[in-house]
Length: 113
Image (cartoon, rainbow, N blue to C red; front, side, top):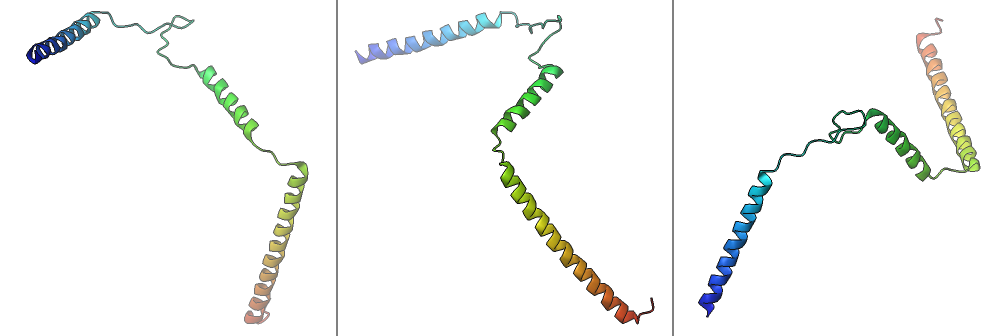
């Protein structure tokens, strides 16, 4: 009895393999699909036109800018004041260092200027 089951299973596998091979042969005889033509009659090949790419680019920019969390006006002015104060402090430090170096150079040269 087990011998009979093995034969049935083996023949089923063989028939299934033959059936798949036949399907493959039928599909091989079909003509290749032609690329679709666009509005102007040219082949499209799935490529996107230049105008569409530019439009999509700017749509992406607008989409990303909508996701940005923009600061309030008060926060912008407070940060602007902080930046101006830090720049002024560094200007004074560099100006002081420059004056000191200039004074030392005049002292070393002997005031020949």
